[in-house]
Length: 209
Image 1 (cartoon, rainbow, N blue to C red):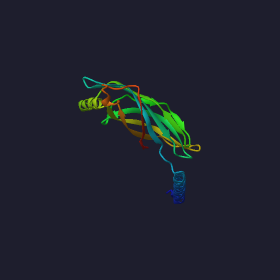
Image 2 (tube, helix red, strand yellow):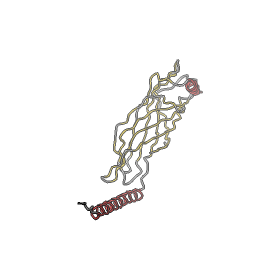
Image 3 (cartoon, one colour):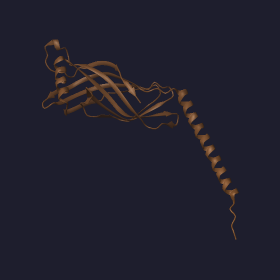
Image 4 (tube, rainbow, N blue to C red):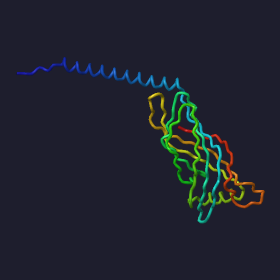
């Protein structure tokens, strides 16, 4: 005796799965549309950083091409958004010279930045007997004798954005601040680095999120 297969039930399941897939796809499109419309209306902007000043407390190039340096920098961050808050989950500050890192990482503690708020940090950025490339050692010694040094202060970290109760995923943030720091007046006849002097820079930084 043969058993007849019921094609009706198989076709019904396929139609049901198809309807569920269509509904799920429509819901995903609606959610994405709401997200993009909200994002467009709020017009989110990246935070703005300014390197306000720098103070040199130590600078010495020694053989075999080692650098010991100590700076205190003042950095301000402003949230330009009126409806978006920013979580700075992790920020590392360090100095580079000719694309080579010359200090350790200095950690800025996590903080929440509200709408239109400004945060100011004054971290010490330093390194002791940091090995540097020979050509950078010669260039640093020349800068020292000339009375000024062109550093780049960098901040790398992770941020999240908050809109109401919604908090975004983490994004990487990269901040680059050009810092031309004088060592003093080289025409004054004073050799070496003049330490403990705060130099006003007011240099805008580039921000990439």
